[in-house]
Image 1 (cartoon, one colour):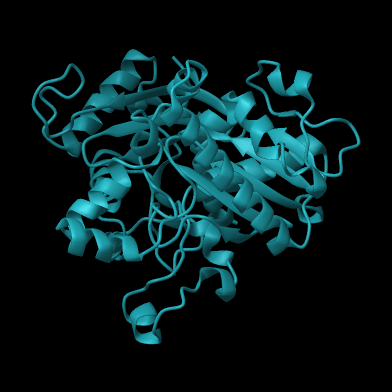
Image 2: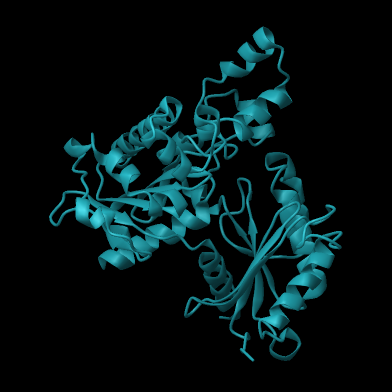
Length: 391
């Protein structure tokens, strides 16, 4: 049986799902991984008979045993939890105790779709494992944003009393990828400016100056910024008033539309980027428009963040679309040549699952494709916190 004593159980709990990986931080080895779905729902092969997250945790331990991980014999070093929203105060991973649980619960109004699931996962794991539990926050990487980048131009009482500011999300991915870029290039992280484009069903951009986040596209919620699979990204805030008064839509209906029926899905009828490309190639005008709008927004942010950083050394593409859509990467940099951006067609088109350079040798700006690994980042942050505590 595999010895898991140096490993971290990484949990990503949603309201009706529990995704897990057992990761060895020092070697990046994944000992086991899985997903329990339809928690609290009826039917489905994975969710049937799983009434809550406590029962789901029992399913996880059974699945780990089937994978050869007898936790009763070998144990784990810790459990690392992905928590989407850490608010303005959680800038680092923290050991979970009752006070931290209360603080995460207090943040539910800022992330009503995400933090409740994380809380359920934390409570289930605390009941199941008598080992350290660590919360790693998706927003933490962006607590370094300067006030000029994090502050909305709203009245002071609204901003302070209701904690309204730009928080940013996908922080574990942006942190991992920015450091992996430095490793790939063999350069100190502090020595260059980079823009990271995390492009999946959810999409976000970040401007990173010497390893420190200086700006990001997502805001108070994950809705702001880039065009995404089903989210609109940036829209005129007056859209709410217009649709309410002219169409009779409620705030809840508009919010649902912007989050679940917009983006690529709203433009092309599908949110899978591969299908958008296939339809565009087949002559579908809506799919072609969706591609063009998606690319335009990306160029807009790359150009803006180059200005924010005072120059750009590295542009990184990551996540499912960023890693696997060479045509998108070529389209994004096509009009940005004056900023020093270009891709080498052969390098860009070559299939690979490894981190790699796709720009020509000697380019003023190096363009990279770097696979993200949020679970490994959570495991590493968890282990680092425990090492520091023991020191």
